[in-house]
Image 1 (spheres, one colour):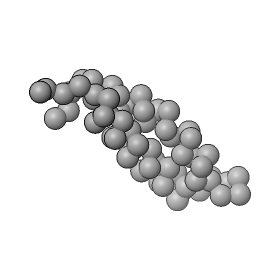
Image 2: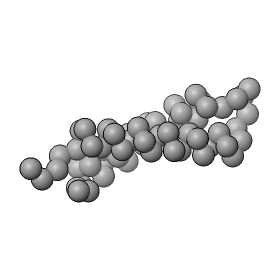
Image 3: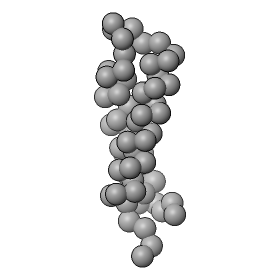
Length: 59
C-alpha cells in the first residue's frame, strides 16, 4: 500500500540515486538516450526497495 511515508522515501531515494546511476552507466563520458533510460530504471528500482524497507505502512 502506498502511504505518504513511502512516497516521501521513494522521492528522496530517487533524487539521490539518479545522479549516481547516470555517472555509473555513462560510457566514455557521453550521455545517450540509452544511458538515461537504464539509469532511470535502475534508480527507480533502488528507490522502490528503499521505500518498501524504510517507509511505514499500516500494520
